[in-house]
Length: 114
Length: 110
Image 1 (cartoon, rainbow over the protein chains, first blue to last red):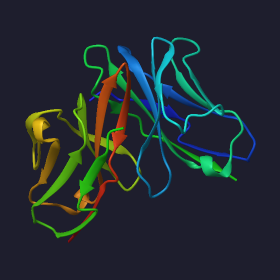
Image 2 (image 1 turned 90 degrees about the vertical axis):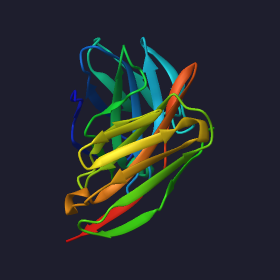
Image 3 (image 1 turned 60 degrees about the vertical axis):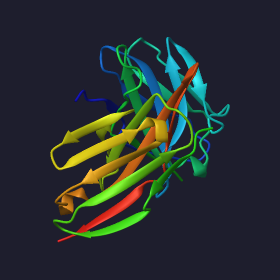
Image 4 (image 1 turned 135 degrees about the vertical axis):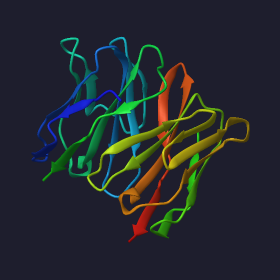
């Protein structure tokens, strides 16, 4: 199975700071997704991204969040001004051009906001 | 939006036992995947199964799309099977989003 990588594996930040989480894509993948999982809860969809545009987003994905693929390689999730309730595991997922529906998940970034 | 319900919410098994996990969903879907979340929090892709039956070792899954449910079978369970099993479904509505169920928490006793 293809491997999706995410950096960092763990990030600790202070409330109000900006954080950028990164996902390193597999070469032929064009569809990207971000999810979050608050400790002990289910995985929640944040946003899907295709062809340098957001194609779908959830009500969680407010103005504090943004996504981009700045250099055509890494896919990033930015949280502009972190809040305590942003503490969660953030997963990146990708799907390839041939089958956009099967998603491959990265190992996640654990974000702790203090 | 699509609702996803998983049952049972919790399951305790003796090593060697078999089990069936169920996922019900409320609308037609383009995608259905089963994941195992291990104790380190990683989501391991078990099956991509929007319809039909697949098997991989001791695990198998069946999705009956017309009746909107999927089943995950675990045979001869091992302690390493412990963790949370998630069903996730997706639908193409122009955009694409995936909805996860709340999961089944499995503990296999030695």
